[in-house]
Image (cartoon, rainbow, N blue to C red; front, side, top):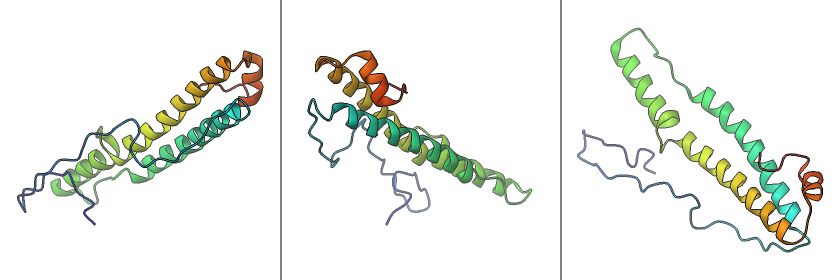
Length: 134
């Protein structure tokens, strides 16, 4: 497995680039939303997003690299690792945060759908624990 796919690797001449991050990738699960389950699916998306957000933030703190020694190479390596793992727009952490945002956006869309089914703001607030769109 090529963990550094998309990284410019001058030592072997490989300069392939990673495809851009899409809001929703192919291969996701399929859920049928009905009037009877729309609020339950919205709550599921919201709860999972909130759980993942905390987990991703914890992992970002754990992944942060500090220079191993006081030499310039250690400092440069720490900078590269932090960029690739945490800070870059296509880093692992950024991709995970995008997934969290996608789940929250899905929950928001399901709230709109619930309103179109006739649910009131009070119904929605009760179902989502007062956290609609958070």
